[in-house]
Length: 143
Image (cartoon, rainbow, N blue to C red; front, side, top):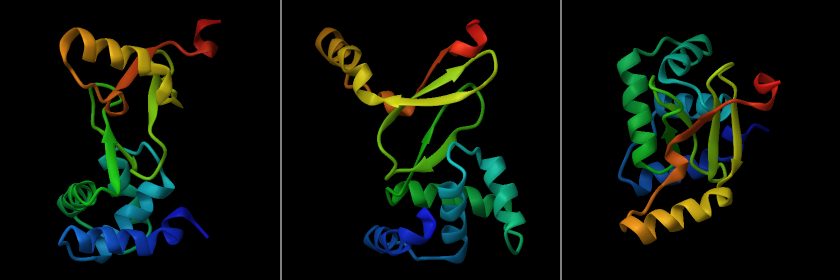
């Protein structure tokens, strides 16, 4: 059973709790986000359309907005391009992006606790480090 199948009742409950309809497009987009973490909207449009009847790009974007508003999908900006999407139920994590090869790695959010605390203490700023990417060079590219 896939993650999308296992959480389909949760998806339906979340959409209904947010006052939204459960549509085929929302279900298909959710399934592709579950199958392809950190996918861009363009990649999701392509994979949704490869897996069944064609869905217009605008409908995929609207489905992503609805799924995010319902709290089941979230996005992150890994670079200066399009956001990438993953399931909100996926553990909170940092995104480490290699600016040389483009590899994306996940790391425990607790590693940034001191930074988050310092930003709060020094600036009264409550940072959400899970919504951004930390750019750098991976160990493979540094050698």
